[in-house]
Amino acid sequence: MNDRGGPPRPAALAGVAVLLAVLFSLLFVFRRLGPLDFFWGLACNIVVACGAGFAVDRGYAARLRADLERGWRRKAGLGVLSAVLLYGLFVAGKLAALRIFPFAAAGISSVYGLKSGVDIGRVVLLIGLVIGPGEEIVWRGFLQENLDRRLGRTAGFVLTALAYTLVHVGSGSVMLVLAAAVCGLFWGGLYLRFRSPLLNIVSHTVWDLLIFVVLPV
View 1 (cartoon, rainbow, N blue to C red):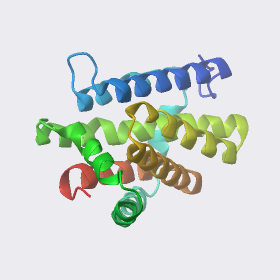
View 2: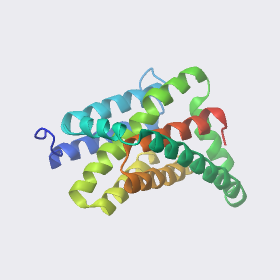
View 3: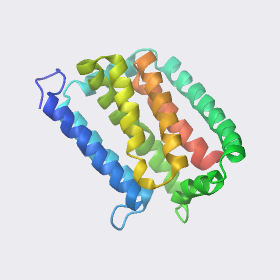
């Protein structure tokens, strides 16, 4: 645990990083958490990971409040625009992948299979209230921010994007891993440029809703 307002100690930071790796990797291997389906499992894992992050980084809540108090309209607008841009990249990427890789169609179908049989209203609520915000709070706002402080901004960006990609490997889906790599670099780049958890939260949440609910690719 850290001193009040200070960054987490290296052991605490490493502990949360390992927790993230275990929780997300196991979920993508088994695609559920006990009796819970993928989306419930992801939401539960995010709550646990965020709780651990806030526990070891006592200054994080204050940083989130400060981010909300400065130019939130601009940040929210940039978040929406960036989500639309990322969605456009995925549309173009799908068209290219279907031409180049014969396995792409099956891989894309397996990704959308995660929501098969799941109530779409629940998916929207979990994405909007927990999954979209929580992933950015823990991956970029906590992990990338604190790796930046310890190792430098470039190293923090690269290591977080790499970790975000690797936890998806257990899914066995090449397309999902590639998608995670693109998203990890994109959202990591946003955080590197703007240092705004709010902007990233809006971008991630809007993109999730577009890609899984509103206009699936």
